[in-house]
Length: 228
Ligand SMILES: Nc1ncnc2c1ncn2[C@@H]1O[C@H](COP(=O)(O)OP(=O)(O)OP(=O)(O)O)[C@@H](O)[C@H]1O
Ligand SMILES: [Mg+2]
Image (tube, rainbow, N blue to C red; front, side):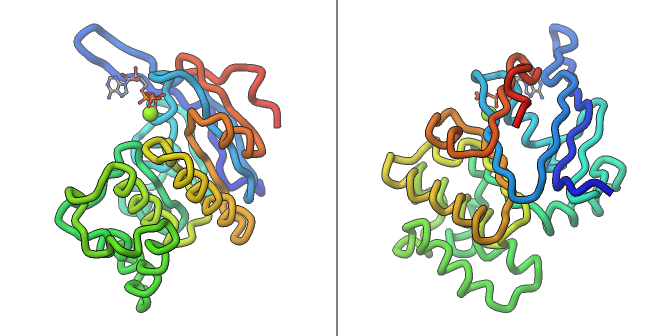
């Protein structure tokens, strides 16, 4: 059996709109071993977020397969896929996607409660303190700045200590110092827990800290970047 934590094989994504068919991703293949960190880089509109959503099982490919810790994601039904996702993945969306009717603390507690963790409040409070939001626990997302919302989203993804952290521009809305702190947190997770990191980023410093970089150009992997 393969030791890979993520195996992406021949993933293609096509969508149909009023102007016809558009290929967003074209025959993408790569594998990641546990503990690896990879930066997915490329121009705006090249397909990075689409790829991340497919790796997370949140979006479906038109063809191709994704295996996560040996589970063939798109061979599973919706419920089974959601279970694998909840168990293995932390996901930070480009648009944060916090629950507007829950406070910062409740947003971060949610994935822990879904796992039946008894210490959800304590663990969520600690994680929010680690991202510098110890004084914003009871704020609703609409009362938080963009960078604060991003940090709540990061805390929610980190708090379950997932095997795989998928993050879409995790420092995109943060000032330099806060971005550095968040980056340290991600690489601490990677080092201490062996968390596999898949980071979409335009930040060259983050990309260079990763073991590998995969460059996407118009939906394809640029050939020079696939090598480890
Ligand atoms: N459901 C859809 N229908 C039509 N076009 C789509 C759809 N989803 C994505 N696209 C298009 O696919 C392309 C890739 O989008 P994607 O969000 O993956 O880019 P990205 O690399 O993450 O860009 P950015 O760096 O700006 O976040 C874009 O041109 C986008 O308009
Ligand atoms: Mg994007």
